Image (cartoon, rainbow, N blue to C red; front, top):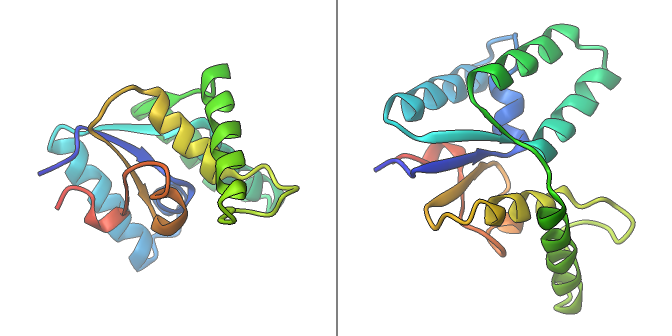
Length: 150
């Protein structure tokens, strides 16, 4: 059964926007097409776009940036909101109070921002498709991307 709402983390987002069709990129692209065909609502969270885009720009991978832009016109884009950022700050603080940070104290900590974006949808059937289940699953439903829709 496919989850109703799927947010793409930076890992799978980077794979599906890679113009070099490596086996992993091809598999992830096929997976994305499959869940979209099954009726999943797939979103690109702004924080995941930021994570992928900054590296593509740094490496001057213009074709990959174009692929990322093209994907954002085909599926829904989830912008950052004040509510999501405030929730992220709460997640960040809680993780540190428990001694379980998901990133260094001076980093932006995209994982808590992504988790907060997922929570901001207010939908109980949201899953984050990721390559980093451990950090995200502390706050939201998260699965390795290949396991979403199984």
